[in-house]
Length: 68
Image (cartoon, rainbow, N blue to C red; front, side, top):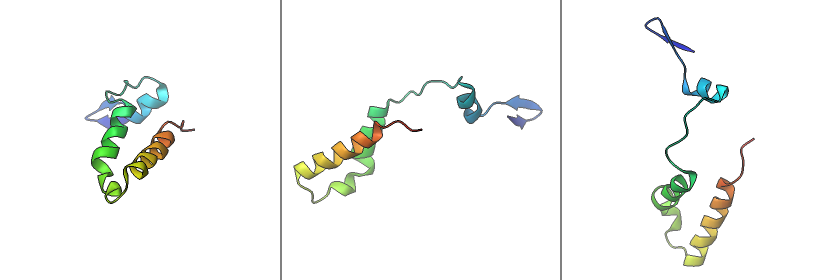
């Protein structure tokens, strides 16, 4: 717990560990679309449509894996 002006404040990490963290407001699929269409758009330049689709399939499959 962090202390600020004598008051205890829980960090988001502590909330997650305790299982009381709030649900995310952004879905994973929305974040993945943003990643593909805005962040990694440069990776698609010069690629054929089938190459772009294969790139997306691999990244999407990876995003669906569970973190252990």
